[in-house]
Image 1 (cartoon, rainbow, N blue to C red):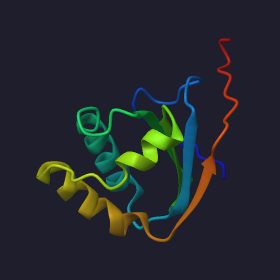
Image 2: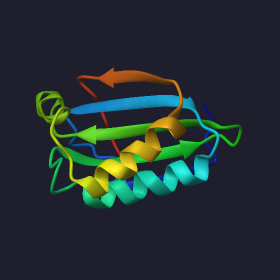
Image 3: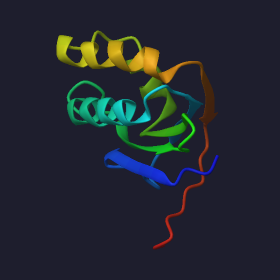
Image 4: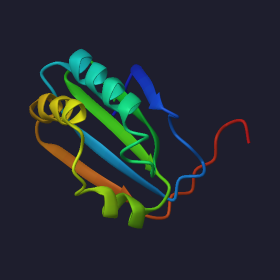
Length: 117
């Protein structure tokens, strides 16, 4: 998917990630979805320390791609079911319906190399 409109949250992508989860879908409001992801990202470090950061790209036709970078898959899976604070939960509750039907792609052994390396 070609995404001319892309942004990062938290630390963005990282070559140090041991696990990356890609989510692809369609939304009715890409701008609001992006705002919610950035707002949630600002609150995540205290709750989900295994999340390094993420990228979000919008294709302009409602299509989007998000990549979330984790330290390890085992830490990511262990934290999936934790109870989140109310302020973060409200963001997730609004975000969920906007994400629509999502296709997930798990990169369990990512080989990431930034252009600067």
